[in-house]
Amino acid sequence: RGDALTGVVVSDMTRASLTAHDRFSNACLEGGDQVLVRMLGPAGSVDADVVDYGDGTYGLTFTVPRAGEWRAHLAVNGEENPNPVARFTASQGRLTANQVTLRLSSAGAAGSGAG
Image (cartoon, rainbow, N blue to C red; front, side):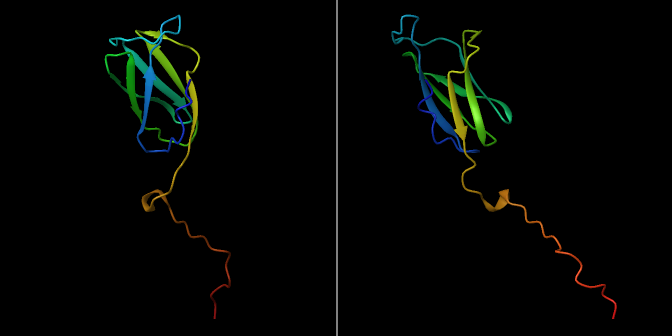
């Protein structure tokens, strides 16, 4: 559903979990499936690192490089779901000194300098 993907901040590691269900909406009690979660957004794509806990749940970690709207797409055992399983907005977060560039500009020539 994607309702847990809130508070995603650029360059911060985000942790999420995924619970597998069968076609009858029953929770799967075993792992072993090959799961790929790919985020698509303003900076292209980012694949999540996926950990199989062996009980039908999977841990996800990922870092997005740019603020904006992102969509999470899922593939299981090589079969892709064309529809996003989640949508979220990543925020810039607090700036640090190494993210800021100072540009000085002249407001115009005050004089010719002749004297």
